[in-house]
Image (cartoon, rainbow, N blue to C red; front, side, top):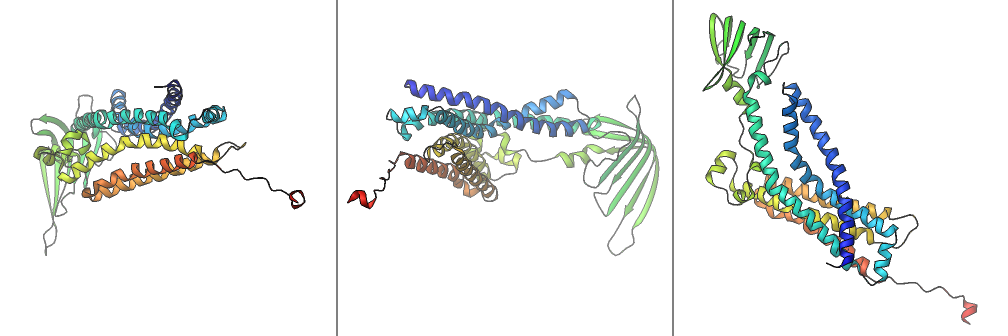
Length: 380
């Protein structure tokens, strides 16, 4: 690689490191605050919060890197122009196409980073995060058993605990199960214990009462009251109804998504076209990095010198980036509805490449210099 290319590449990589650090920090802190509030409310420890926020970091980085590549290319090109280095390169005979070569290499390097994240680290982190969420969902005591607060662990279920004794006993328990409108039940007990069994957690209530309200078509609802000394209630099934979900496609490798087997389809509940669409979405994601870098460079070459700087070109570059990312988002939404339309996922990178090529072609065209007007008397 020629020295000038290495110089430009180092220049852009330096700016990229700064913008990537700032954008990842801002985005990650925002996500971490949301997770912190949710997990702390569920009674989790600070270590669990730290683990969850760390597992979201690969996804945050993969989303931010293409934007950081654009910002680095735009800012780096502006610096080269303001310090007259770009003018010196052009005076030495370097065309916009030639100067775009190190920018393209820079974009490809960032694209490789995004590809490693999208195809490797992000699915692994998502899978680990899903496993940890399932483990926490099984920890009923930490997630749902809090004293003095009405809780709604599932649709149609209300739980209230008056007090929690140091030995784990639950006092003054109230449990309403209205998931079935035709058979609603209210359980109250003086004390209760949560026991873990092979079939899931069980709630053993002592010295309480059960009220059942049963309704039949064409008949008046009937209320029955039963007092009990001990009653075992399956809360594992109740909470599992809330926590039970199909496994996310995004936790599987790209190779398995491109050729989905029966086990994957059964675990996720997805169709083969949907799995393949998810794989192509990952493949298209790294392409946005070199496109963003080229847009940030090419759009700033448009127009001539101005003592007011290149703010107009920067605005046009931002508009072009927003258009390309808007097309990418629209294509992803369309593919989510119609997985067979996955080829449109590559439309946004293609249009971005055409915009960058058009900008470079325009910048490479020789500018015509108008001849000064000559007065009629002088011409005579």
